Image 1 (cartoon, rainbow, N blue to C red):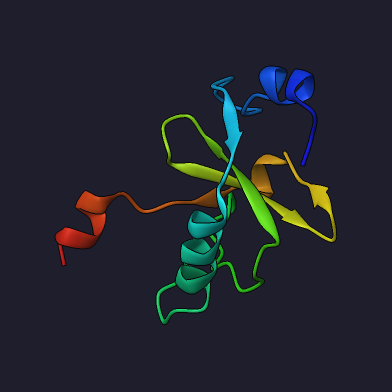
Image 2 (cartoon, rainbow, N blue to C red; image 1 turned 90 degrees about the vertical axis):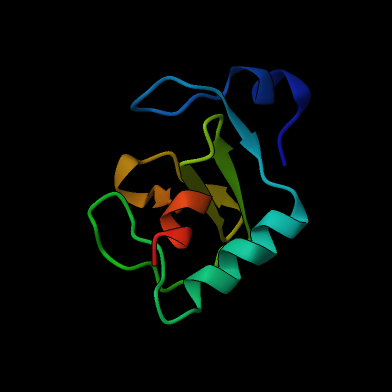
Length: 91
């Protein structure tokens, strides 16, 4: 979405960890999770109900910053919590 120079400096606004653009398969998986019966939550703890066009994911893989209407939101309230593999295996 952005050029390489901008991608190199993008950071999570809360942790300052680098963020990288999600590949298409990860975006499809995130949208499947959003449309599931147990969607991920946003930065305010609300269930995410709107699919994303793309996203940038934090280096640790725990937060995604959505792209909607061709705009990347780096606002902490819009960040989508990504459940880890251990979260889903605990059920």
